[in-house]
Image (cartoon, rainbow, N blue to C red; front, side, top):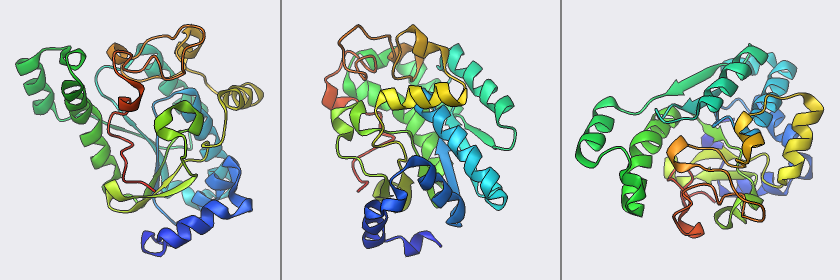
Length: 250
């Protein structure tokens, strides 16, 4: 199978296939598809869950190991706890390949020289500029030679993700496939699965961080707050995307 065989009609059929309604089945489909796929990881609870599932899918289909990998965006401003979780996953899943992508050094230097270290607090435009330099452009490089990618997005995470399907074609990245195996999971489902399978858990989650990103742009939330309230907390909810998951996916 190649991405040319995955048109909008095929994607709709995949979303309606009852056999692909569960996350493990979606990862096994990915392993059997013949597609070259990368799992985008911020080493949140959702992402370590997916790494565990990806490892299981590879164990069932060892030939897929050369086509499936985990990639992460090393923005230069990640929490230490996130880096520690990454190393724990490397040790726990030695058969899974982890690839890091860094921002362009000259662009980071220019941004800091011209606008300082915390320009993203000043406006949405500045924040999106920082996200583009540190995350979006590296993501574009990470996806350049892939047939698709796998994410830990869930419908209940935010208003911008409420109708998220499990299978998409990502028009913003050349029409590659985008898999969201956990889209129907609630937060409680994620933590239950982690506990049952002894999966590495980012220590920030125990400190009140349900969503994890760069350190200056992520905070713990208070009781009763939305789970995405700690991401870019100075902005309105409808603006809380960094550009990695834009609106061109269907």
